[in-house]
Amino acid sequence: MNHTRFNILFWVASLAMVANGCSSDSTTTGVTEAEPSSVTIVPGDKPTQEQQDRMLAAKGALFSRLSGRLMEVMGSGGPVAAITVCQQEAATIASEVSAAQGLQIGRTGVRLRNPNNLAPEWASSLIKASTDTPTFVKLSNGHSAALLPIKLQGQCLMCHGPKEQIAPVIQGQLTKLYPNDEATGFEEGELRGWFWIDLPNG
Image (tube, rainbow, N blue to C red; front, top):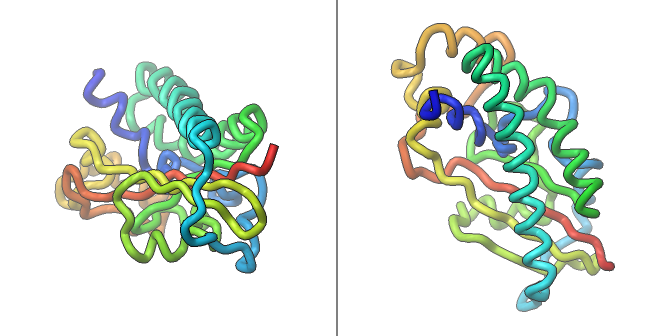
């Protein structure tokens, strides 16, 4: 059961959330809409270590909240029930974590399961470059930000691996909830998506 319980956690985006991924079809996984396109990365400027630590703590908080809820549902209803939880509850969990941490956090994917899971515009160049290491930046609006990669875990192949290897009951639920799903066909260790975080000043 432990092998199965962690399987759903990172379908992003997806986290996002974490796929990225685990979120409602009607909202993104952040608290508010993504920053407008006029907000860009300031080259050569980096957040302080304290700011980086805050963003990493927010990612950890989202992981903890979402994984706890998923494990609870996996234990009683199995992976199909957890897929439904991801669709219906993950956005609320991300919003609550964002509010508690005083920032915005969400997830996006290399290929999207939920078409609403788009990252903010400032992250587009990093995503296009398939950035696969944690990246901390300053934005033109004075905010700090981070793009943190999600690598596909072996247990995640149950929902994100080649379609022919996904159990029919899981594939059926994915097709029902995400008819335009593009987030399959991944291999273990492959870049699956990213957490994105936007931390205002103060």
